[in-house]
Length: 165
Image 1 (tube, rainbow, N blue to C red):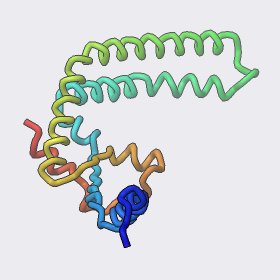
Image 2: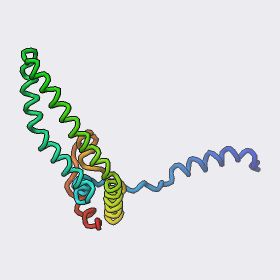
Image 3: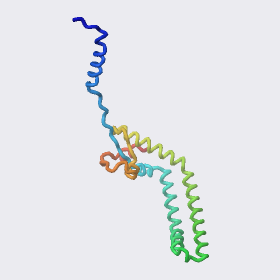
């Protein structure tokens, strides 16, 4: 019996496809996911430390203002005109102090940017050295609900800290 090559072409094509789909495929390697406390790393840098000090100072300076304002607000409609005027003065003082603090923090933007680059580089180096393909900020992952549990062995904060110069 003589077989025509044209007649076998469709059969050969189907057979090749079928056999090809049975061949084992390369599996994607498992990806290691790590976590890092970015805020703790940033606090080792000058810019963020100074910004935190400004924020702490603002809170200290305005604590008494807030207590006085809350006492007047608690009186509600029974507050006198003088007390309402005092509340306006307290609010104006608070706003002025907050704006001054914001300007001081804004002046630190170059230092903050430099600190962020240093920390990002340290995290990248730690991730590569330890075979991690994805690294997430632990606080962001937890607060967003994206991650509800992560083993402590996935924390790269100490390894990244070693890379900060």
